[in-house]
Image (tube, rainbow, N blue to C red; front, side):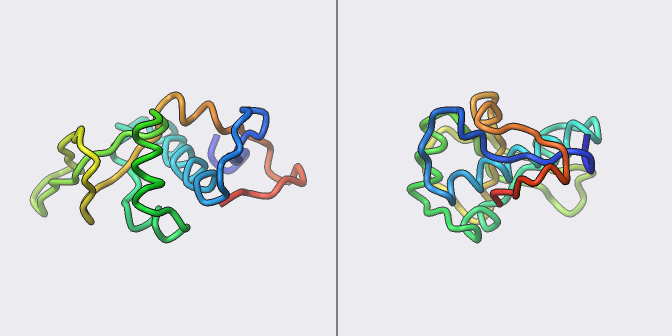
Length: 124
């Protein structure tokens, strides 16, 4: 539940990923948690490309995450008159400033939840 637990990268997943990639996976998993908590579509909490590049990801990192199956991406096509966010799924590896990302089940398995105050620090 949001507020009681936090996500962190699960080192036991056996992956030795660079810190920005770990931080991105945690950020995407947290967005998943928000969507689940609000009982809404995962894409309502899709993370914008600018938010991921701000934590240090390169475009190549994003391409790697997509081709590794840890994230999915789509272009936001929401109009001001739309009641909810709207996306066009894309299969290519060309990203624009309207590209947003969501975690896949494989990406979520790279994280774990821990109680807040357990002494562990957030990766992101």
